[in-house]
Image (cartoon, rainbow, N blue to C red; front, side, top):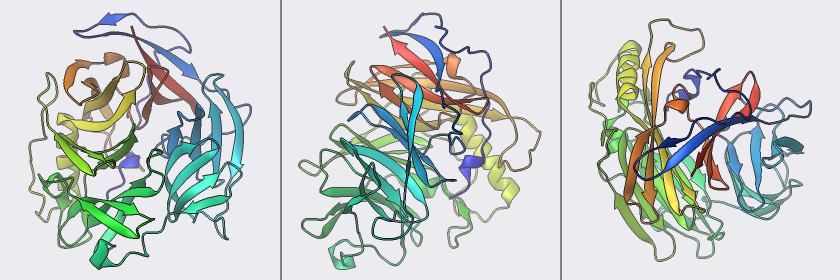
Length: 379
């Protein structure tokens, strides 16, 4: 996977903390925008990953953010908008999490699921309560093949006995979803890429590790596992209760259903070719995750189209951002598209982290190295 975390962040300097924006009305809803910052209480909060390894837990109402530098978790009170405390983690030993963490999910009161080099449920004092181990299942029962690698895994609080992970097969250049049932010691395999989006939008030589793969999102919402693709709008909803899979594809007003190819995925091309192709893809559309709004009983999904300038910057994969347009798609509880509208107040943001709290969409923004959020409130 190419280092997408190097893509530039364009800050929106026109927002002021706590200042409400103008009310806007679209076909099915109206919204307003304001911006808030978190009081770090003198702490230096970890913002380098743009809160990609963080979770707002509806279970207890706190935001938990992984700090790579101190290998700890920052607990943030979003009601008071302030840092509460930092929870140290062990890297080794019986409660060790390993040396890297890729995902956090609040599962129960005072408990978090951590995924990374190791995976499991821990208490807020760092004690390992439940280990998630995929290695005990043989390949014949759906276990991990030699040519497969973990992509990312999640857990759903409604099904604590199961874990769900995306696996990439580097031989076939494909991605699948696997469900680990620890109690029965078996793994189910679910096809969440029947249109070969992963292979289609990979740039580089598929016969080697020298290629750039598109992003695949996996999200745990309500009692569902939702898998979506960056450059195509089809997404797949797996319901662990009944082991059913639902495929969703829709036609929207502003965003295309998929990105038009400029370079075949199996073409052996140069780094400059790949950069140009990636810019071309991102200039059309990049789809984000779906998040659930319990208050309004609907799902939200951001997408964006980004244009880049000519000036290269040291340490960045792509040139400076010259323009970016953001769109919001709204779905009902059964994933029927209700509306799609531009949200110009978010233009220029990377949209790396967003979630719903109290019926509002919270979008992370780095405000002069302070943890900030642009909040979209619905009328």
